[in-house]
Length: 129
Image (tube, rainbow, N blue to C red; front, side):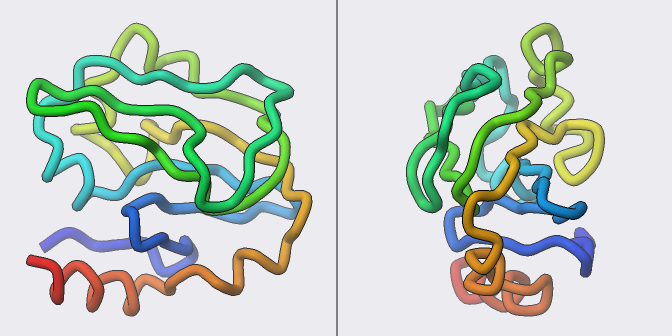
């Protein structure tokens, strides 16, 4: 069984955020990459783009489907994971680590409190499957 890092927060749409000061690193969960199958392309916003919580910030394309990535928090994109443009399959290999998608400087830090803990997320996906 996959372990979901306890220091991350999770969305119902299967994204995660790891807070470091006022910047959140965002990715998709192991459950999401597993459901998608082999990921072949990632479309991410440019640095400087403003994103809103629960709104699409990009997409991942797998051999099965294209899925939106929803931002778990609002703010400004300060960094994107350039490696994923060449090796999107990293998301299948390390979704909670090296395959992070973007870093966002939060404009509303309290939004993080609305997200699920690891235990709540495990319960959510357990109820879903």
